[in-house]
Length: 275
Image (cartoon, rainbow, N blue to C red; front, side, top):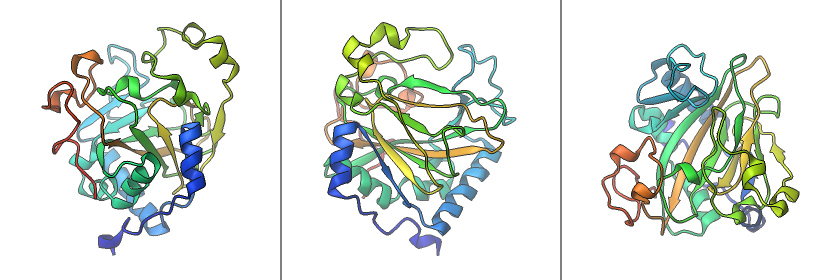
């Protein structure tokens, strides 16, 4: 049965495409069937137990002194490119259903996987993820990349669901925000017009639902204040026309693996093309 997991396409309506392009995010319900959800839940739990590859606490201090990375006490646990270390997660991260949704939302004929990542907030030590855009952390020039945030557990505001600022992807790219405190505040960088338009919309999800958001969309999640774990699988996609920024952007965890030259389109085996 596993050979046909994630095979059937998901139909995104014209209204959803229009909403995404206007607001910079969109919710899609019941993207995963029950068997598919169980498969990725079990696959992620296996990966969490083994912790292979790039693992860090996004809310750790800058010197990493709060991040032991192996006892489950991380405030915001991030594991990047699990598809390279776990075949069962590779089946999910390179599946044609989610990639097809990315093509539909962007209008791109093709998309590549930038990377996948697990984002886990355990009860107790969990921390909020600060308001931020994603693209300032990515080594790319042009806008257009987008993320699928797949809920593997039911997620509420109290559990740390995604919250978005509608239309904020039209504001352009800002400097990266700190996940550990310090740095500029929103008051320092937003215009009066942007502050007036700052109207956060929380999107609660059932397990197997997802949100999509543009790389310039401002978003945030609460700390997990419940007694249950919040697991999410994120897959980030590169549409056509996105090029490597090189040393014009800060280093990314994938930077050491990128062999293309500055100004060239992101491609190659590091960023696989998904049919």
